[in-house]
Length: 110
Image 1 (cartoon, helix red, strand yellow):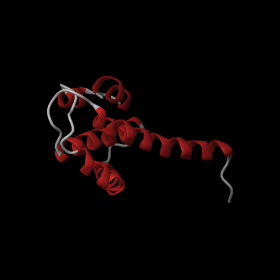
Image 2 (cartoon, rainbow, N blue to C red; image 1 turned 135 degrees about the vertical axis):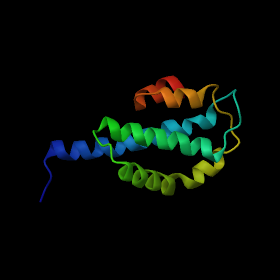
Image 3 (cartoon, rainbow, N blue to C red; image 1 turned 120 degrees about the vertical axis):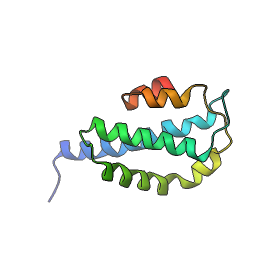
């Protein structure tokens, strides 16, 4: 069965959205100032972005969040290892906790 064009665009947007969130999170590598990042810091960023992205789509299932986190971890494990020790922007943890959207994370926190 062939997907309708609007369905194909929606699937591409969803994939692009996850990639965008991951790229934004990894942009912390270039951040200056602040403390040195730990692996736990980057996992927190992925967790928060995953949680917000799914909530924006109407999903509130903790099991789905955990599944997506495992998926992202598998995709970006090597990149995360390279990020450890880089500097975090000042106040990033508090900003992540307060963020109500992925857009807020990318514009305000990173």
